[in-house]
Image (cartoon, rainbow over all chains, first blue to last red; front, top):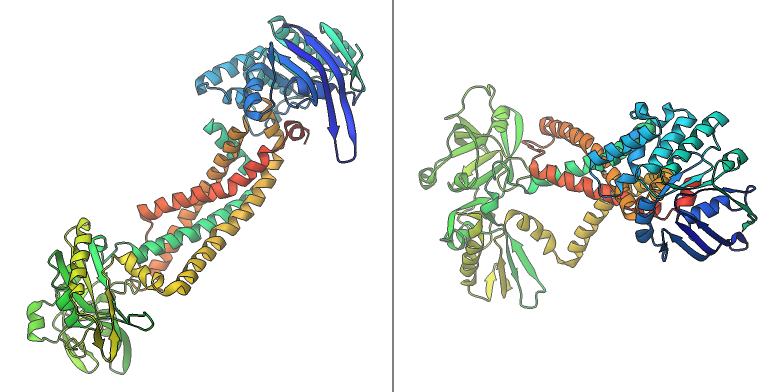
Length: 220
Length: 415
């Protein structure tokens, strides 16, 4: 489902060159739940961003569902991100000015769907994360765990094949963190391929496979 | 999607009331000035009382004579005879009226001096224009042929001249420049901004001091030519021009030898602009310069300010931009979102401006600053206002949207 070959990422400024990822080779199969761990600054989020086409590698090949990413031009990758990928961020990144249901509908705004279809799909996604009773609420009225569940609903509303989660439990207490992992596991059991960056060993143990990074290099 | 954009725009407005106030204040003030200008322009050049037939009227205002080298020029209004010979004879026209420009004059009520404007006209003046007679009737061909000392006055002059202005004044006398005239009609006046029909007192052209008997081509008369239909304006123009072409060249006017003679018959707007546009490159450049400067001051500077405010506002929402991009929003769509939001805000400002303009127009119309001012917000003014709102919204929205589109997703999400 996700294939990375010799991926390298270098950040350049006028005077410094930083190697963030070095020769990463990765193969995530369809339906796998993979966690990425490593110390701060080792390149976990950079790797996730590259898999999620939020950033372009300096070198190497990326394939998603057998499709090689040839260009990083906005016109070409925006539809790929929209249809294939769903993102869950550590700090939720909900739009405070929109209600829960409007937040969840966001990925569907960029497809040809009717307002009614969008509403139905968003309601379905919110039901899956147990928040059907909070549809009209605004993010500020929710707890951290509820916000992350809204973010998960937003990530799955478009039925993407790949879900990328960047420390989804990082801002939550352990009980809420567990709740979120339970939801991710259930999504995985229903066929979603998930790549999750985490600092938490206990969470990582609940995934199928662990990838460890150190100084931008894959060590496990 | 549009509802989503508008929801966001509305919430953003509510998020910072002071910022919103400043933004809307700037937009509505700018648009109020523009709407007032549009309304004033419409007042100047639109077809309004008593020149409601402007769409099928041609104006003959000046005769221009030049030598063959175009070194010297003589430009003036025309004699009554000239217009009778060359304009009144246009067969394609429905009617032609010859009348003088308004002139200043004085009347006395006891020791009180009243300054007024007077015009001399033929009887067709009342048929080509659309004056509303509050009392009496206009003078006719018979009055003119008889050389009757009669006058049509405006309601405003009546108020100033007669002690009891509520009583009818038909048949009463007014003394102007020591001559007594019998009032035969009272009309609702025409504002000074419509100089072809404006006056306080109208006399038949045969009344004293009109100088209608002047020989030669120049004098103090002008003409309005009414076509049967707007589509016939060209035919009327062409017939008039062929009449003018019959004047033998070269000629001599009061010692001035000319080889080129030009008399234009133009619709109101063209006639209005001709003096400027035919005033040589200097005057034309000044005209365009002034228009450009006014547009820059009225629209450009506030738009630049708004661009600045919008850039700040958009960058404040970089997290939202990052999320939308991450979930597949193409840059083009996001740009469109911010432009739509900006247009939405501009339209709110436009709504406020419309109310402000309405209030100001009422104040101008009732204040008496311009007598008989009848500024309105009609459909044309409203349509122009909508277009102005759109242009303003686009002007101030495109640049911030472009700036936003350059944000990388990672940077946007980090901020």
